[in-house]
Amino acid sequence: MVWDEIERKLRKTIGLDPKTLGSHAIATAVRERMQVCGVENVATYLNVWLCSPQELQALIEETVVPETWFFREPESFAFLRRYVLFDWLPTHPEGILRLLSVPCSTGEEPYSLAMMLLDAGLPPNSFVIDAVDISQKAQVKAKQGLYREHSFRGHHLGFRHRYFEETPHGYQLSTVVKETVNFIQGNLLEPFFLYKKPLYDIIFFRHLLIYLESVARDRAMQVLNRLLSPTGLLFVGSAEAGPLLEKRFISIRHSMTFAYRKRQKGDGIDRFCVPPNEPDYSTLRRFRRSPPPALSGVEPESKPLYGEPTPEATREYPPTSWAIASTIPPSPTRFPESPLIQARHLADLGRLDEAAQLCETYLSQHRTDANAYVLLGEILQSAGHPERAEKSWEKAIYLEPHHYEALMHLLLLKESYGDLTHASALRQRIQRLLKSQGNTTL
Image (cartoon, rainbow, N blue to C red; front, side, top):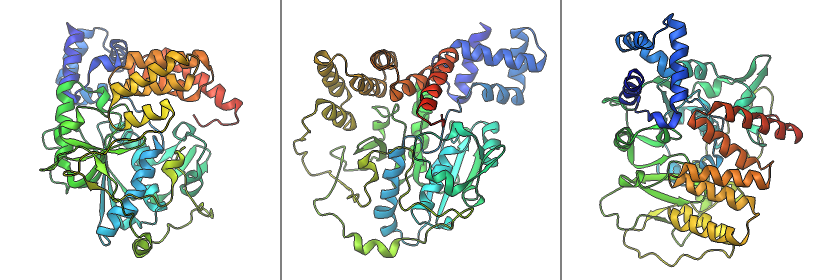
């Protein structure tokens, strides 16, 4: 009964679905707080907790999941960079771009947004980034801007040379970047969350929805709909795209980018299309801003890379001027011959059941293709089937014990369950793999 009351309070206060963390993780957090408070009985702690806003916040600090790193899911940042340069700037040459990162955790995401915009040539006074998180501890760390190797992943870390200084205590972020982010401690589910703030052009709301119970998810969608400008873009995590968002938002169909816009009156077909005529990019040169100053004597790279984007994501001048296809009937979709590429295209279009079926058909004939199992797991997770996704990634690892993507997917899933024992074992396994490859950035 006592544990039910604790879970009920967490559900009401921060919208947490206890099943996503697991009762073991919550119990561990409670016992840690009991030890700090000098309380031996759970019922006694419950009385203290219910009567003390400070202790409520302290337990919340123990239950939140601060797993993040710089340029996580890099395709989203590459997509946003092109959108800003070739869509937003031409129509707002003197405007201020407003961005929101929620939850911002320990700051890696909003700082990634700032570095991406600076690398794109925007001066610091041309954009505003608000970064919100419920955790006070995370906010303190974010404001310090001091990070260890765990926050840097992937092979393309040029941004670290441009914007960080290595110290005995870790990598210190430059003041140029730190001053572009405004950190706010707050709860997304509060009735007046950011109520007086101007609307945002860009909202990054990633890796929180999967931890919320159904009522809190719907409430979060209402708040985001209120905060996003009519022409703004909402970015979510790869595991969060799906029907819940599509009640109020329309997906922008772009490979490995999970972005949405607000629904408008007259939306007949829920898709974006690229006009037949590409824009004349020569006319956009006047909108390019000056490059950021070099830091610590390091010259910027000619072409910054964030994480490990796909070749498609790193095209310099792709067509990115979108129009709403509300009156144009959909044309037949032409897929490449490869079934796996076809499955990924179907997933990008939101047709997850068809994509999963295509993967399973392919695997019935190619039972030893580890990459196919990884893709199937990604599709199943996006469709809301984490247990089936877990089995698919386990099969991939069985076939290829050193498959990095499968190991990482499984690690993040175990951490989301609160299964810290298996997560720790997977993390050590990945670290050994990276070390053998000469990379220790996990």
